[in-house]
Image 1 (cartoon, helix red, strand yellow):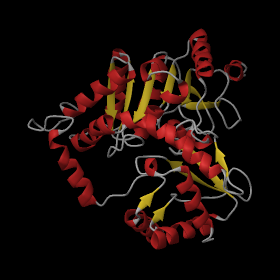
Image 2 (tube, one colour):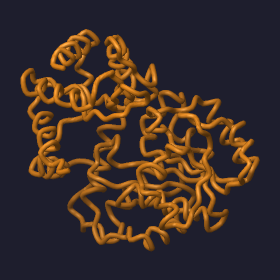
Image 3 (spheres, helix red, strand yellow):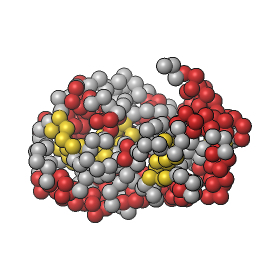
Length: 368
């Protein structure tokens, strides 16, 4: 099936809408180039040579990210999938190839199991529940593992986070067992409010931390893995082997630096406002918000209608009323008869009051 007409309609309706509730306004290539050019006086001096194989502006991004996470060093990667592979493979060299990860973890669900097919790693499921494992569950596993991977937040379970005591218990278990912890922190930037700790405190007991440059920061692409200096030195060897030593990556690095300046300070406000938006959505008849309240600025919203009807209603509301409330809907949801969408509260959503959210959703449902 060709999805181009659907994607084009979604792009056009969201782009032309007067107000957006979830996510940001999509850009054309021209607009993205103009935004990049506007950073001439921004996060990095531009009157210097472009980066070559990761020096210059890329190295600036690596050092700044390492400092933000409380680690000695970091390495930049063109994709998060590559970053995950290199991070886990580097641990496999010294500890072994078996990784304890959640069945809903990103490498299991969204990376075509590259850790097994390409990297020769093997995964052990942490728990069958749609939540983070407990330390007791990990201690009771009857199959040994070499590395513990924790996805913070666990996206496919609803952007779930443990509480601080639960995370501390997982760290302590790994330390007693002599196993390193790798944090899949693609969305770690927005996790500090729920955990009640700073980013360096959250990452202090993790041997390696992966973060995305675009999922929350709004960069063009890319990811970083932070850790101890010797670990990062060995990590860069695997980055080269996986094809991640690119000649020039300055556009992605520059946009990521801009995201650290612009979006990182805003994330606590987004997280706080997400609770208001979620509470308003939870009042809709037949609706469910998960988790309630949200742990980050992202959460799942479920409605008892077919996904194609919900998507069509969304297009019509944007075209006729100038309101784009949601991204794409999909089914099956977590239960039969439910469709699900992911809500991301960003700057556009901060302009919405609870009353406005409720009224807009009522108008949305009237189009079904």
